[in-house]
Length: 479
Image (cartoon, rainbow, N blue to C red):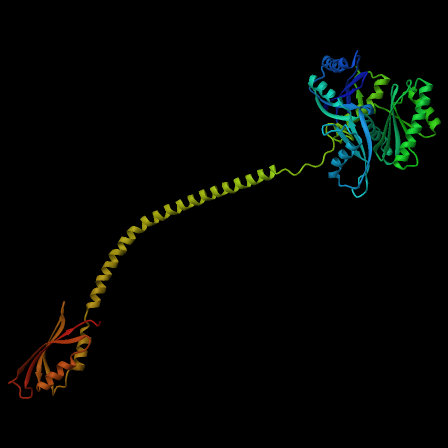
């Protein structure tokens, strides 16, 4: 449970309620009533504020969130009829229209409003409330000097209405009149569909529970208020009447009002079962009358419900979407992309280094194989060169036999072959005549054979062959 201070300030007294509140339960820890007396207006401003600060400090009340409650006399109210506009345009239109009716309204004046309809397609009805000059500054100074945090400034009748509707939820659907009697002062709030639609502040000659004259005056004021509110809301009637407090004097007053106005009168307890007071807190009947708004405001705050009127946090047009988050998101995205690129490059570089190292190791392993391969290649080249220069002598002998003349023309007596650098066949033989030798030399020449040496001599040993010859046939490789 969080602790809160609820502060109400009037011209004659200040009230403070220290609460420990949760959504379903509240405990009243302290209740203070601080009389305010001053000699002149200037002294009053200083004395009243300092009196409240001193009383709070004497009771150890400091460093708390504070809800301030202001009454009908502290605000100017205007019921505005506006054309259909979207909700986001309503705050500016309300301030503009209110400024037309209240010339002293400026941009710094606290203003809040309560829409009395939900459809933006229909003409808008709005109850606008303007906080009177000096009220906010006075509350801020008290909270500053007492080291309190001013969290909300709410309207009394709206806070009381919230507590009433949570005690009597059946009143949400219709029209009713909430009557708060604060001694001689009475605040009348007409409520329609759960919203405050009309407010009046009445000063009676005395407390109506103690004076018949004051009671009669209250009856008259209630009748006037019901007629005006019914006419404004286009309703047949405003009922029931709801009174705060269920003490015997208030029950007697409720019976009298019901008879005089001829409408049902309900009573609500400002201290419902969900509110517990400490033993040292003994609220008087006047204290209980003021508890309604103070407890209603604290209950709304504890439950996280928005206040109907909050002059510290009024309804505002929606702020334009901030580009800050967009810029931050873009910056983060860019940073992530850059980081991803750096990480990816690092990973790729590491992988490439590993690949290079592996290739270097594989290259070192293959160098020996390459060296051995070079030896083999060199040997094979030598073999190839040798094979390219080799002469197949059987083929040469067949070639020679095919080209040699018939035996009647010539015969071979000697054949010498050479397979060295100079590959040749040296022929010696006998020929029938010179023509036969010439025919032999011509037949032994082609693209791979060339006759390079010739000798011819007369032969006297054999009468069949007149010429002894010698020829050298050089064998060349084809071009």
